[in-house]
Structure formats: C-alpha cells, structure tokens
Image (cartoon, rainbow, N blue to C red; front, side):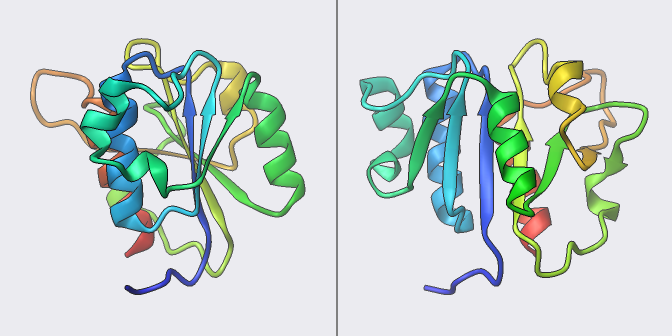
Length: 155
C-alpha cells in the first residue's frame, strides 16, 4: 500500500445521512485519508447503516467527533493545515484546475446534503473548490462529490 506524501483530513459538516457517512468512510480509506472529523449533527459509528455502506472502513479509518466545526477548523489552521471547502461559491476554483498544494497537509470540508456549507464555516477556509455541473442538476451527492474532490487533490 502506498503512503501519501502529505496528510489529508476530511471534515463532514452536518451531514444527515448515515449511508453518505458510510460511503465517505469507504472512499476515505481508498484515498488514504488520515482522519475523518464528524461535525455537528453528522452521525457517528457504530450504526448498522454506516457499517453497511462503509463495508467496515469505519473500524480502521481514524475518526473523531466535534460539535462545533468552526473550532476544529480554527485548530487545524493553527497547526498549519490548509483548509479547503468543497462548495459552489463565486470564489470557487474548478476542482480540475486546482494547482498542486505542495507538501502541506490538507483538510477537505464537505457540507450538508441540502444546505451545503454555511457562510460562517466558509470564512475559515483558505480555498473554495467546486465540481463543474453540465446538466440540469446543480449538485452531486455529497459522498460522490467528496470522492471526486479527494482523488483530484491527491493526484
């Protein structure tokens, strides 16, 4: 198994669906994520729906629960970790045009399935990235979007 040159952290901010959380755990394992932070109302393991979607990845991907996402982001920034939001904003960079982020560790923040990331959380982010949408729908499932962004960041 290859080891990434930098740590990648994944922050789940107020994700509602246990199935999405489980799917994200499985993708995080495949992408070599160092740790997942489950924030706000995001459900935590153990739970049968998380376990079914993750195929057991929740047992070996490190994770931690935080009530207030902004406090976590503030701490990560103080530790020199680049915080990147996956959100459609006017300032967002197309994820496929993102320039490599050197040897710095990165924390990718993904938000609620309906509301996305709040303006308060976006204030703590160093960069905002988005996935271009070419169809009628304006967004992807959060687990799918997290996977696309993770693999683009680590390439």
